[in-house]
Image 1 (cartoon, rainbow, N blue to C red):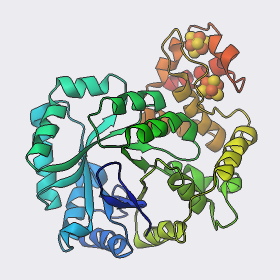
Image 2 (cartoon, protein in one colour; image 1 turned 180 degrees about the vertical axis):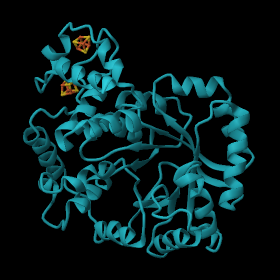
Image 3 (tube, protein in one colour; image 1 turned 90 degrees about the horizontal axis):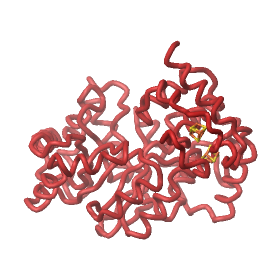
Image 4 (cartoon, protein in one colour; image 1 turned 135 degrees about the vertical axis):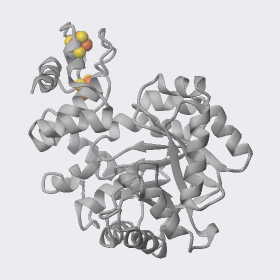
Length: 361
Ligand code: SF4
Ligand code: SF4
């Protein structure tokens, strides 16, 4: 398995990381632990878990599996979203016990969704508590996970608080996060990407997305994973595994891996822009909005409608990815400035109205 060095930490991470949030039968602790051990045997050494994943059993499963393996042969990553320092400390201690380790290799300040979230974690004492735990040796590397857009992630990294970042990145949302990857290279921090398959969107639309494939790719899944790990800033891509077959499929995607040449990446991005009529590319030229709407996020929600059809795809994106309430889209002032600036000439107001209408259905 190809390994990359995580930022300036010196840790060599397998280019595919184990996302421990999708076990098929988490209540079967031994069977689930077997999936983890299988991945380790196949060369994966980065295991990403968190409290609450899989009915709150994921940390326990990882602890059960990894306890039988040499400690220096794996890295464990977990998270905490508490703003209060005391609560973060309690959560960290619970994670250490469940994972059966004396130190978390990569501990995340978890899920910054809005620009005000980091100041809130600082004010509540969470960041200071995590830094103290690092001094005590309970945390090896302090990192952050986020769904902010590129500019806001760049600002988080500029704070100098974190040795790396975990962020949602895939070929379809790559324009939204380009600035984050540039910033990660600038500050020399590690980057672990979540959701390289767009939460299943990419395999579900395999025929439409066949142009993602390079000459040596056997499937769109393989192409999507390779696209992620071909980015120079990306240390590893997390794939959520339900069973050993999925582990083997992801590992096959990076067998004989060589990064895509820049021409391939440019061709894919051009085809995405050209082939998806009405697709928001996340360029951000429509900003700022006088109603403070983060228009690229809302248009990303509408992208799901184009790809998948139906309200449910938009609802899921709103709720699980951006944590936005649909009725907020109704705060548009109808000034039209965004539509004049939009590089894709999208009917932004009409799309916002379609999203706002979800609130009443
Ligand atoms: S039309 Fe609405 S969304 Fe567009 S800039 Fe004006 S207020 Fe913002
Ligand atoms: S300018 Fe258009 S394409 Fe670019 S982010 Fe805004 S809505 Fe999307």
